[in-house]
Length: 261
Length: 107
Image (cartoon, rainbow over all chains, first blue to last red; front, side, top):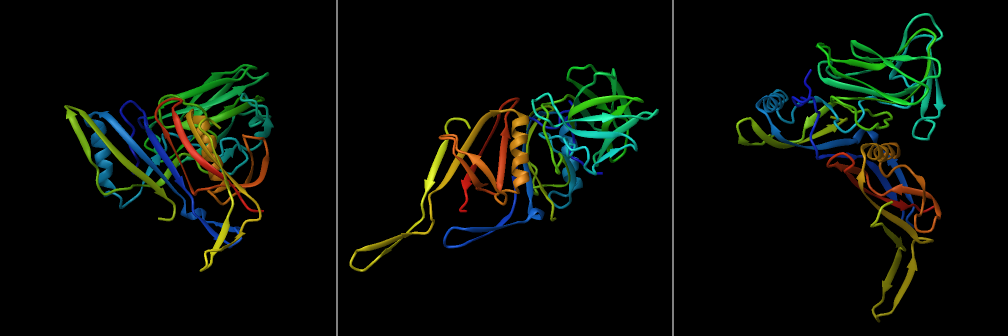
């Protein structure tokens, strides 16, 4: 699997990061000013402008290797948006992207820590540990951070599932942000993120987020589009970098994700 | 909204000028249309994500929504984003910057 490399620090990008989304709407306007609009979701384009400073030799070599492997803008690679939540439908666990074990119950419209009602309650009425997970098509070997807010009046712990790693985290009746971060020795081309509940456990969950970095950033709500772009390409056929000293490189590049290509 | 905020009122008037210099004018739109330019700075990633999701859910300028005029509180029921693009720049933590334009549609 070809994918955009992380920096050696585990960071997915450096500031500043610029992202632009473009939609396509066909508009027929009458002379009176009335408009008839037709959306063309298949023509959507997402683009990023990334700047890197003080890259070391290894980081530059990884970037250069990807550029050569995809032959410039010819072939696609997987790009994990450094400014987004990798999980789709972060507040709608009833969507098909979420895989809930049988008999696990998920109820929405629960009060969340931001004052809304976007949290949901998860209950495990069985005698076995059950999970709620989402699989993303991204290399399991990268640094990832899973984060979520949880609370429970009855249960004292929740399992955070990050690929093959599961960590028990303590919870209380107050909203607490939990994180599970690290790198797995796993060569798989996909990785799951989610939660596991002990038998009989019931808890409220909000703001589940996965990021390709070593620590959690602010929660970002997602709907149908998560931060995984399997059809990304370099925008240009050239990759220019500047070296100002031994193992001190910088470069700027543009990446585009076009669904119809 | 943040300062500076811009609001535009727009009529659509056709003017026909005759050989003798006189003019006949008539309007194409039945009423004035409003447009708001919203420039935002010092946003955090969560706020940027909310705007991004709003753009996605509207599919650019395709969707319509109601918008409350921040100047006088009037609710305009039929508004759209004016452009099919939405971008932001994140220069650091809590250093996001973006802008968008909301326009009123004829109803």
